[in-house]
Image (tube, rainbow, N blue to C red; front, side):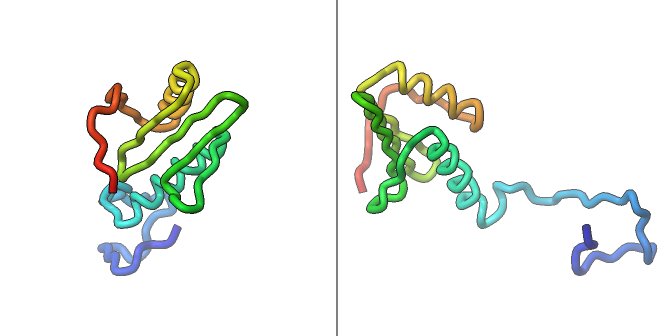
Length: 112
């Protein structure tokens, strides 16, 4: 790892075991939402979902009689399915990879 540009230290040479302290987490960065979406969408594709080309935030999974639709809006996710057990399995699977909060049944949806 190279020393960041503009870093000044009293000693000219740092020891080999030196470390750099992270001052800003991923959430403070401008690209954080893009990185989160890239990781989340790749997880959905691994689960067998297909991303729609007309609306990149809508993912569907059709397997026989099973239908699951997943819509991502900013940091909210809306799930719709004809099989309650498949939705529970999907939520558990995603909860292992991401920190999820289940808000139960949808009460309001603002369509844009």
